[in-house]
Image 1 (cartoon, protein in one colour):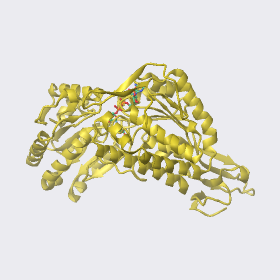
Image 2 (cartoon, rainbow, N blue to C red; image 1 turned 120 degrees about the horizontal axis):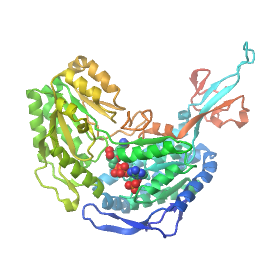
Image 3 (tube, protein in one colour; image 1 turned 90 degrees about the vertical axis):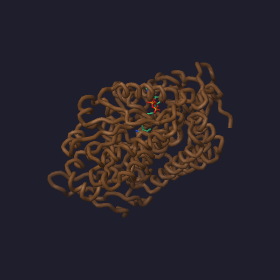
Image 4 (cartoon, rainbow, N blue to C red; image 1 turned 135 degrees about the vertical axis):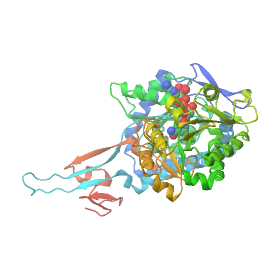
Length: 530
Ligand code: NAP
């Protein structure tokens, strides 16, 4: 399939009049054809206007049509074939197997959203029947359910070019909810974005969905994304990426004359606590699992374990020696793009110069800068070192982590209290460890959206119960997740209908309950008709 490099607005290719850029192959430095054009202000307006027009049609379609649209997208992703995976691999340096795994994840979450909306209970339909005889005032008939917000702006991350980009859960959950999407393509993988967009249009055509439900705007630089969030007809935005980018756009969303929800999933240090019993009984296994998690995908995961904490002891020294040996054996690997590589290199340099840190070990092979390679790094410090310099707890995106030795459980508790919000917190412990560290565990529950026991934070399960979120700075709204079917909750709001005629109600609120959805009727969950 040919890649045009144009904006794709409601299925149409725009003309090529603006500045252009090319994607690079990070492993070779070669520019990849073709050139991609920067979206202009007129094109941004055109995309949002098309989305608004499509919203009225799309939201009133039967839910079965929306679900069929999602299933058709899942089918069309496969139709893109190897050419799609090869383009993604060239733009990211990821091996084909990783690209294929991401494609599977995108297909899986797209079908999960189709099934979710077919089932219908996610709408949280509630009915309180009237009581005209109630004194002193009659009770009205009150019913409510979730309704879509309107056009949604989406920003994907560079490290998930398929599963958190055009075909990501942000796009699919917005479509599932009834909202159109205008996505700002990630400049590091514009060709992947365009091919993915074409799969969405093919699915829209097959299922009779207006093409205006989706537009792809390309751009390298912050102007396109900023203008998109500022557009008055954008009603919400979802972002995955850096803390700097997420926070900047969150502020833009809040400074609008009419502020909108801006759901940013950002970076995180994902602390991993090793309690004394686990350290004594399983140090080699934990060392192995930790280094594998740290270096998976070259450390380019938002769930990377960025700090590891344990009590100073012989067992801790043994664990440190084991991880040092394993990290030294890790071969340097290509990072996603020049910006991430530069940030990683300068972050490592400044940590090497930091008096509160020592280098414990790093890949023994030298990285090749021409291939944007990163060496794995391990630093060590003490709880006091973190007190001296809290910036040591900041995320450094890449295969790097810091071991923090504590003087005992009081130190661990003090450190836990000082942690910022994280996407995950991992605890390795025995039954006795858990019983001995209730206070610590209680504090850690306030710091994260996902607690992991005797496991590792990478390799997120995409399912109904997952929560991929957490207190700021992990996200801007700790209530919401960007992964799993609950992601749909970001793009809806409850609408209440009081004494509304049955035939005018949304079908899920009508007395007969023709779709048989689970509803709350006078406070009880039931699928019964009224
Ligand atoms: P990024 O540089 O923040 O880019 C994400 C998107 O936002 C791009 O489209 C970028 O386009 C745009 N953008 C960035 N800063 C902006 C600004 N100030 N104004 C307007 N637009 C802006 O992030 P990335 O390199 O793609 O991803 C790496 C980061 O994502 C890591 O920190 C990682 O931890 C995080 N991440 C988080 C999750 C999660 O679920 N929480 C998942 C994966 C990755 P332009 O550069 O063209 O403006």
